[in-house]
Image (tube, rainbow, N blue to C red):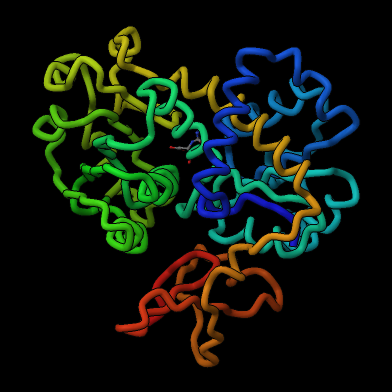
Length: 362
Ligand code: NCD
């Protein structure tokens, strides 16, 4: 199995530290990296809308001296004729050296990594995870706060469907002295499989719906957009979409050195008046994302022949013959002959989750 980035846990804390080092060097000495990917091609396969992630991957590859091919709309690809993810990536493996893929179905990049002969980067799969945004978030926190340990980090908004939240929380759970404050309405609470990661790592966390009261404690405030496209009920989205709006008045409750992050796009959840506040770091995050994606492309291309224990091999897999994943957004629903695979996540209570989307199996 070649090296891919499907889940942030595919990389150790040390590897992330190394990526941050390289990204810092890239930001200081861009010329040194200008030809590192000469003759190499990145394919961007975006089956879901994106501005930042796709363009930052493309800019990253150009700045490394490489080339980019791909599509930004599944309607323009053979997927519209019914082609599977497996077939698409087998084909693209003949044209490119590395793939960045975004897909609305959860687990699609994992299927791609199993089928492609080149490295796959998960650029967001449904409401599941988004590990490269996490690299950008960690890099930004490191640059702004000088550390990744001993931080109180608040997550506010749509913690249920916000894939960037899921990946960043799982990543932070591996550092020491981390406290997490989960700020959301009841309907948009963090999924259990992510909370479990906090519990396993003995990370203390609290859940609240009150942003003002939580603000004074935070070193980092991670704001998120309510993910309208993932709601089954649009009326519920309309009711919840403006549940939190961060503005100058509210920021008076925060410390002078609290940083505000947001993966963007922003809708209403941060007032534009805050953009001039020194604590607002969301546009810095965008530039940092390009630099750390450059570091990531370099790493995966350099390690493409390194044997690794991949995501599936790290799990205790069971077949559970009679069971089927019930998540309608799971890739196992559409991919021909993919079969079901479950991982045992809790021996005591015999709890299994789908390997692809992490939905609990009843
Ligand atoms: C996020 C995403 O796509 O999950 N955007 C991004 O990649 N920077 C967040 C969002 O869409 O709200």
